[in-house]
Amino acid sequence: MTSFEKIEIKDFTPDSFGLKNKWMLVTASKPDGTVNTMTASWGGYGVMWNKEVVFVVIRPQRYTREFVESTESFSLTFFDKKYLKDLSYLGKVSGRDEDKISKAGLNIAFDKHIPYFMEAETAIFAKKLFVQRIQEDAFLEKDIIERWYPEKDFHYLYIAEVTNILKRK
Image 1 (spheres, one colour):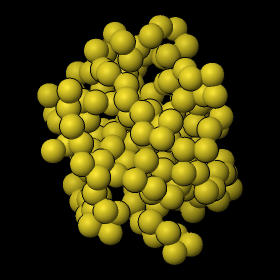
Image 2 (tube, helix red, strand yellow):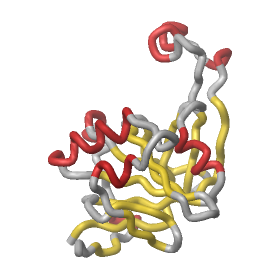
Image 3 (cartoon, one colour):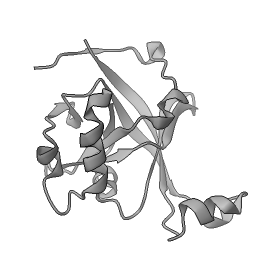
Image 4 (cartoon, rainbow, N blue to C red):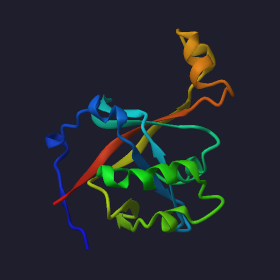
């Protein structure tokens, strides 16, 4: 069994721009205990409303959004590059269609009822503070819409307070 240690939020210094090409899993559970996850690479860390926060975006059609919407908190997990194939699979297959977490061979653990993965290098736990759908008329550079939103499926932006961080020992 993999063991983790708690990292003080003030001591966590991620290289946000270095994470540009590194994927993460956004994971949440519904009140009935079912868990779903999705692979993501867009987001960030920062300070908002005097709180340490993460920024995460989720497209409306993603099954994981139902899970994030149904709960107060979710996790972001980061992995060693040897899990790249699993993360790619988890990003392509929907949990609506199969038990993709089991098929990827990942093991779910919980911290205060928030799911994360035992194979992760780092797990960040976050409590939702804000959610809003990105609006087409808010874009100043219209070519972003053409490139990233040809279907007009604008992301939901979540701002969530970091409540705990676990790092592999």
